[in-house]
Amino acid sequence: MTSIAFFGTLEVGLVYGLVALGVYLTFRVLDFPDLTVDGSFPMGAAVAATLIVAGVDPWISTFAAIFAGAATGLITAFLTVKCGILNLLASILTMIAAFSINIRIMGRPNIALLGVDTILTPFENMGIDPVYARPLVVFILVVLSAFFVIRLLASDFGLGLRATGVNARMVKAQGASTAFYTYFGLALSNGFVGFSGACLHKPTALQTSPLVSAPLLLV
Image (cartoon, rainbow, N blue to C red):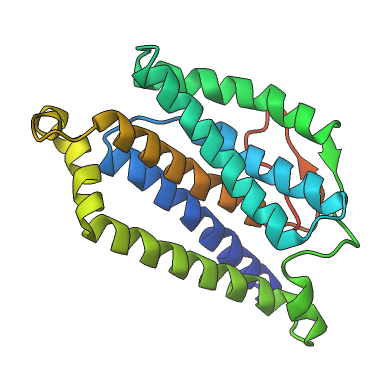
């Protein structure tokens, strides 16, 4: 295995570490079988790619991708909490709708990001080889995200979040809102997934379709 293949594989693995954080928050913490991630992942990529091509700052585009992912999570939470739809079915409905929304956001089947400034451009200008810069940047982002999740779950608010997944009736008996924790948890989870979609690096264009759930994004 060449060094390019090794660091490329390491980079992709780190990117999917952000997806793992998001899935952990829903499946393990909230006990919520959320399949929205299959739609929020390419949505984060679609939003980031569209904004970058339009000339928006790459970091602003990345934050916009996070908010877009969080919005999909809020929609799933709304369908579950307010509409009374089964959590698994609500997430599937949002996931399916996200595929069409992603194409509408992009306005075309794919977006080429070759030759545009990305979040890695400053590091490349410093003379750092992109082969090493990409996994390094993603590693830092993953560590910061993991630290945030650890601190959140260790706080009093995080205790309520975890209790919602373990015993929602007890949380209600204590006067806390399980609906609020559900909204927050799904938004945070899919925000991480949208962030992951915006950070997935491949030497190709972004490609999303109802038949391909994972985009290829050069950021």
